[in-house]
Amino acid sequence: MKSPLGSRIHLMITFVLVTCGTVAGACLGLLLSGRLMAVVFAAVAGVGAGLGSYFSRRQVLALFQPDRESVPADGYAEGLADAALVCIATYQAAVFPLTPDGVSEAERKARRTMAYRISAYEGLPYPVQSSAAAALEAIDQGADPKRAETAMKELCLTIYDNRRGR
Image (spheres, helix red, strand yellow):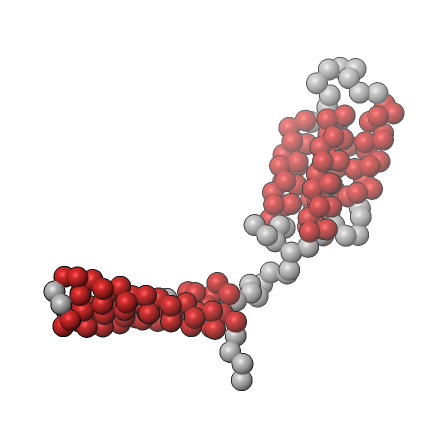
């Protein structure tokens, strides 16, 4: 039976640590008091390094185990979610412009069309799709900029929660 990669790496690191600890203890003991103290220091340092490695084994091996609950990172879906956020944010800026006549009706319609298209794309994760739909609904009503801002914050948080590599 072949042992897992994490176990083999931990074993190699343990071997190196115990060897280095033993040699360092022997050198220190030899410098301080002679051969007998070199043997004592080498034994204590080697046993200490070995015990430290033994007690940390579970934590070290946990670093090498894949997370069972999460799905592998999908950069394409994350990129789509970011693109949807940008499109919806530009549509929000067109609906609630800083100056009264800052955006033409044609530009507003183009931004709306683009925001709806990317929000309905199949590759977008479902939680992001539903949050994007809520944000678009709040923006489409156009009466309350605070409600649209709250919906955009929710969309940002949903996108952040769906990131796998964080």
